[in-house]
Image 1 (cartoon, rainbow, N blue to C red):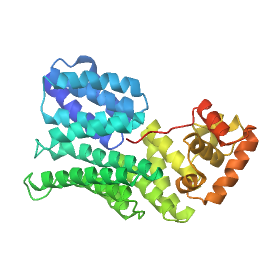
Image 2: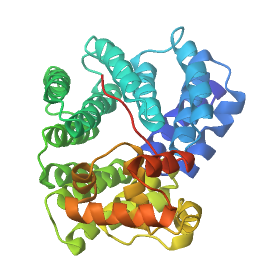
Image 3: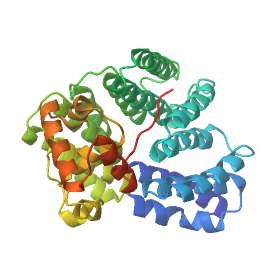
Image 4: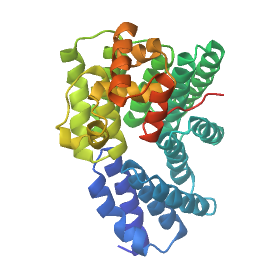
Length: 358
């Protein structure tokens, strides 16, 4: 085969390997194209995949540089089979960085292009899911601040994106949508249920099963993590929460995605589900320093974000009274006089993570 055709196949295989969570194999697959590709199309595709790999491994700066290179090249070569996944990657980059407003902007820019490309659901499905996910994240923050108007705006935007997604699938032709597109639709619908404050794990389990049926273990693991969160929010038993959460943890460890593993471990701490040996915990040094337990560390993070006892309780699935007890113990262990000083300590330790909502 010529180098051009071979590099194109490598890029396609790399994307599929990434989707099913085989990051190391994806890296090996695209490396020859990344180093030796000669056409603009193949260079752009390889740079995009390298950006996604860097993002999954937590190297946001490298991911941004590679993605910008890929994006610039894509404007001159390649159709929506390149641009669609790159649009999704731009949203995911901002989500990983924690800039939800920028993620929303990227998602809306992407959706404006996606609605013009009916019939390309394989290349737009992930983008639609991410657009709904961004609104769900923003709605959760708005609900924390009792901003019902902001929650309403998030819901309207999410419903509009989901409606466009469904309309595009119905107009695409064929007997039924591609299985991967249907799985992303199920995931987007689960995000909408989260946005609306619905706490049942059913939609997440449906999405996990849809991805599992096509061997896409990585997005299935994300759905399992959210199912565990929904169970915790609805007052499920620890043993019940542990089943989907440990499944997500096993995949996170196998895949080797640092950001996703961090999210799974954080949920495990909040829900009281033991997942990893202490030496696997990325926060172990911080925990040992001030002498805080893992639960107290979570409370301190939320104190740094300015949360009340009620809000801390909702976040950690405990009562406001129990949250108050943890706060008192934290003040004593840190040797500080009040919540403001504890919040300042959280910022010094790099624990605070507040993201505003416009």
